[in-house]
Length: 146
Figure 1 (tube, rainbow, N blue to C red):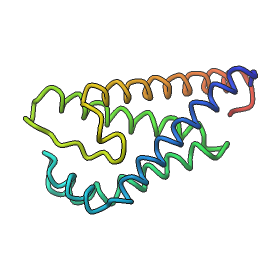
Figure 2 (spheres, rainbow, N blue to C red; figure 1 turned 90 degrees about the horizontal axis):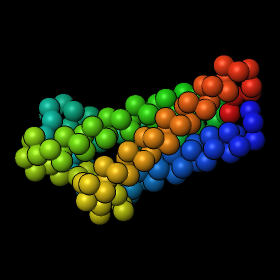
Figure 3 (cartoon, helix red, strand yellow; figure 1 turned 90 degrees about the vertical axis):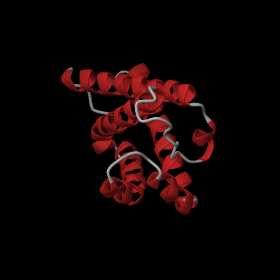
Figure 4 (cartoon, helix red, strand yellow; figure 1 turned 135 degrees about the vertical axis):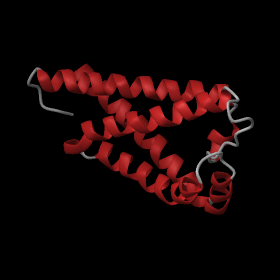
């Protein structure tokens, strides 16, 4: 892989690792609050019960996939899908389709307005797409995967 593309992909992966570890840690450090917030969401009951126990491990799994060279591309793709789901959820919340939707994010993310949160997610989504694009292109050209 070319040096500048390697640095870009490494930067994207590092940023996503920080994001996923922070997101999981903030949920786990105040799990009771996260659990209560999830139960105020407008979704099916079985999802409200399941998500608090599934989301933090998924976020940690994404970070681990990104941290291991052999699974980095899978981590980028996994991150893309999770960010896409979260971004669509924020867009739906902003549309007021369901009325007032509480934010179940932890830490500094919970202090953001919905608009700021949407911009934040779109930025990370675009960074992830860039990482996937570069990694895929470099793999197709025969360079060693990042």
